[in-house]
Image 1: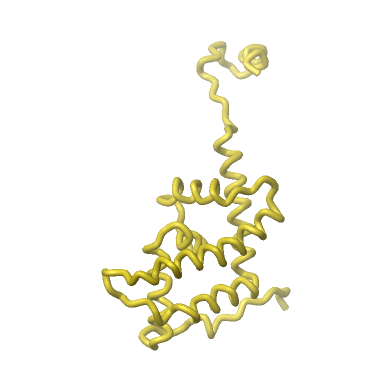
Image 2: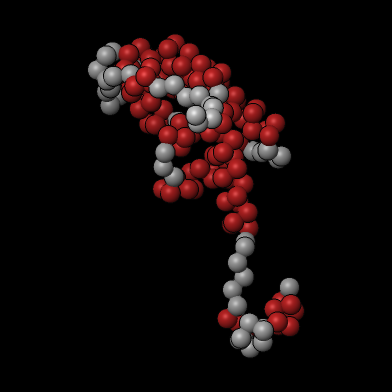
Length: 164
């Protein structure tokens, strides 16, 4: 590859190969794979069966959570159950659609990029690896169930279709 750069360096208007910068590294390939995974996850989150799975889990356990600094012992069991159920659902879908997918590697990438990631999809994903995010999700759900916060999801209906 360096030979090709040397051959064409005069065409580039620069005789010094040291000034050439090669763009298109493994990092950009990793970014493309990460973006593809996120796209699939967004699709999963939009599926009715995922939404029902998560809602049923929240319904089963929301009453256990309290907005206190000290955590109950049962929280960790609920957290582990959540990871087993929800993460497995996502992982199964991704393994069917993305060759050589590894949930462990993906979680590592999430943690590495955490400061750059924003949005609802990432908030949900962080609930798999961050107990505080998991607990906050339940406290938010509990606030809706207790009537302290309005449930805006009931007024939202997402459908596909053309514009008329």
